[in-house]
Image (cartoon, rainbow, N blue to C red):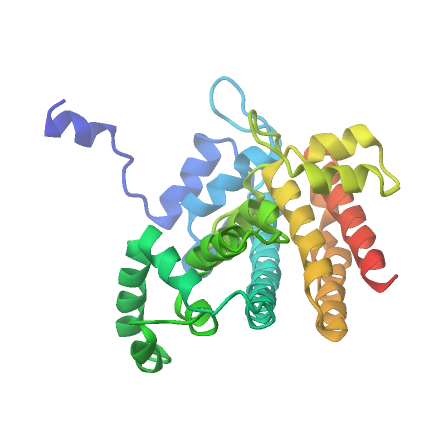
Length: 316
């Protein structure tokens, strides 16, 4: 393919006004819930259309011509706003989880007479040499705690090491630690879900872009079974189908791990109440927008029931 032909396939750059015309004429998006002037203001000051467009398939089906049926610009804005608040809440939870996993690991190390705190780190770095490079790069860029880490680089102990590495590397080290010492490691089977949530929140991914089950996706079996036995007030078929949706599966797993791991009752109480307030407040502030959307209503019902289930378990 020539450079000229490649350029012809690229999407043209559009002004905000041209984006609005594209929404109306090419995608069939209406401007009843939010008029064109407010939509223009939103696109100029709050968001850009490439992100908003990711919510289109969540809201409505497309015709053969590529136009959406019953999709309003206000639907996209509302979902993007809910998504933003949800990411902030979930990111806060993952930060708590990271901290308390580190506390658990360091305590397990300190209380194990067979572990000197150094050999396991040395073996991990032998297996993962790029981690040391990441630490060096991070220490130069951080500007906050980097200088205090440099003196530990040659021979870090567990209690130094967990503060020097990224969340991704910490998750790997956590699993490696318990495997190396041949000690059962709690929570490692749930780390895929925690990592996905953390990455999505930290990298500002549009989390509410799909509530469809994904073929081949493996739900968390332990959490799935726990919910099926939990008398949530919704059918087992609904639970099983919702757990095949990556976001709903990961949300349930996050709550399960959070309520079991976080040892501070106050932190747990405050965080869970914040999420409940969001679910019962801002999340449903414009619920009439999505009255006819079965996927969104089912997802909300499932997530709210799961939130109640784990909240009640944590105070029982």
